[in-house]
Amino acid sequence: MSERTASQPNTDRSRRRLRVVLDVALSDAAACPLEEIDGEVTAVRHQYTGDDCHADVTVAPACPDADRSDVMHVATQTTESCLCCVFSDHGCVPQITAVAADTITVETYLADRTTLTDLVADLKAVANTVSLTHLTRLAADDQSGDSHTHVTLDLFKLTDKQREAAAAAVAKGYYATPRGADLSDLATALGISKSAVSQRLSAVESKLATSAFTEAQQSADSAP
Image (cartoon, rainbow, N blue to C red; front, side, top):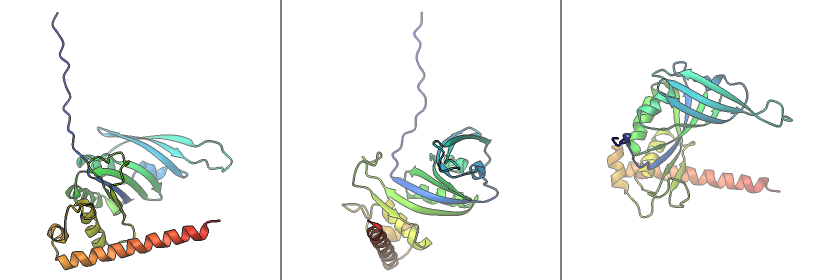
């Protein structure tokens, strides 16, 4: 009897250095069936296989007195303008974390800033708007999020140019300890002067510090 040799599947492993959260306002061309769900979506379990997209969508009970949520299964065939396809084209696994009106919030992990730039550009081609709201640079041992060596920026309140500068700074390790890049590195990556980078990052840091202080003050004021 001949021995069977189990065939080994081709496996591509690459470390993901960035965690990003994107708010995507959908266009008619990139309409998603999740938009048609009635009620407040509280969780989405999503699977994209071939030309089919499947999602188990948890919907909060319509009546506050109800003791359980409903789970709706949504299945649809994808097109080139579907968000699933765009993320897949860049080797990304999207996790839908929120659905509100015509905007879907998606979290994913990326290898580098170049991939982020390309992903956002392709998403903008099929969506009305794409906003990078959070970006985290993960340390080498921090995929689980247990380490305290990662840096997260809340980019929601920044301008496009400030967001671009902040994304480059985080992606290249400017805020890491020790720093993985300096202002010259960022200026080269962005194609602008060192002084312009410095000004944009100063504005970013000021806005983020002001926002953090305001939120802390509001929390303190609302405490019993």
